[in-house]
Amino acid sequence: MEQVVRARQDRGFTLVEIMIALAVVSIALLGLLSLINSSGLVQDDTRARTIAYNAAREKVEEMRARPFDTIYAAYNSDDYDDQKIKDLVTAALPTVITVTIPKNKFFVDGLPSLIVGGVAVEQGSIIFPEAIDPSDGNPYLTEIPTDVILQKEFGMEGGKDLNRDGVVDKLITTYTLLPVKIEVSWTAVGGKTITLPIVTYMTNR
Image (tube, rainbow, N blue to C red; front, side, top):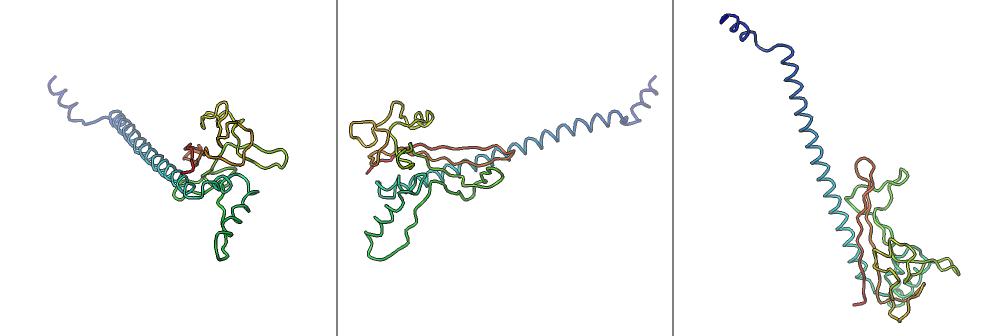
């Protein structure tokens, strides 16, 4: 009996044992690769969010550096009032210069592209509480946003007196408080769109 046991021990591993061992090692390696891949995705996501947040904060500071009463006209969704800003700037300067008006959309360097309809578009957007004036078709600031989401984000449920005239108006042309929402969006791995919003109020300092 002792000789039989020794013979079995000397044979080494059977084919079945080797296959089982290889399967166990393969499963362990797949788990490790998946963990490494997930870690890389988390790092990419964290990096993108940091870039997006910094870009939004920089845009807020850029807006605050402008004359307060020109911020809305410079960054709103239409260009009907851009000429007013150009006239103000050129009238204040002794020499003729080219005045560039910023837009309500902007690209963010270092951030993955935002893909819309197969095309890379601006990742950043600047949003104000606006309403269209039916008399001229142009957008104006509103103290009563119709967008329920914007109402909540700006804290304007029931309206807010932005020009402090004691009345909540549908359309206003002057303001002492300016609600602003900066959205930065990008297309992540897998085609999912991620959006990071920042909402703030600007005041005339």
